[in-house]
Image (cartoon, rainbow, N blue to C red; front, side):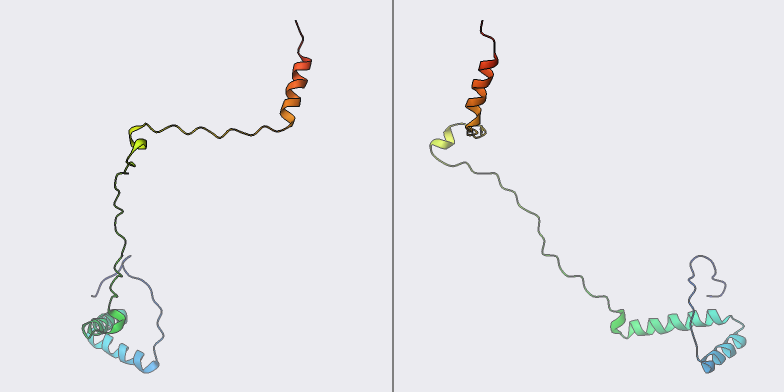
Length: 116
């Protein structure tokens, strides 16, 4: 654990009570290690123990089963009878009803055209 430095470490600020900090200093002094190394080691050991004991904070919830299924496409069925033997007619746009103004406009245009 000692000597791990670099970009794989993240800085965290932790407030410790005075008595816990004194214990940390004593352990670090007797083992000739940094307080950071001791804290990382103790934290990892504690988290491993919690996981092994099945602490609920470390149990990953099972993903919900998706009920989505692929869509099955089937060919379209043609109706039986006369309509099946005749080719389909192309749809033509519906005829627009003429307004009353159109015949008058046609007369006005015809009146303007020169007669030969």
